[in-house]
Amino acid sequence: MGVTSVANVNADLGAEEGLDELLALARMIAYARQVAQDVKLQFATNCLDLALEAVKQEVGEGLTRDLAELSSSVPQVSVKRH
Image 1 (tube, rainbow, N blue to C red):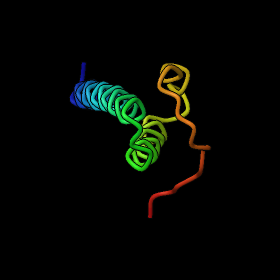
Image 2 (image 1 turned 30 degrees about the vertical axis):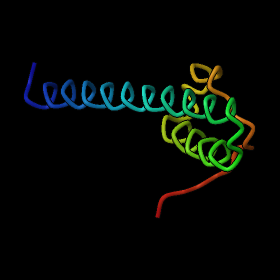
Image 3 (image 1 turned 180 degrees about the horizontal axis):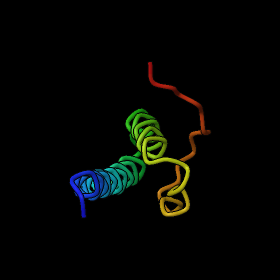
């Protein structure tokens, strides 16, 4: 295995860890959203909906089915980075 291969493996591991962190963040936001909804905090629920959708977009299309249980009522929008 060459130096380039080692660098690619390390980059893949870093990307995997970043993805795991985003998935954990999405679960935390979904939990907070559910609590806000249970105690009837509509504004907080809406803000957490937006946050959850932003994290789901960051994760990407390939894992949206993994996050299906974390659905919110916010429609999908396209937000591109500048």
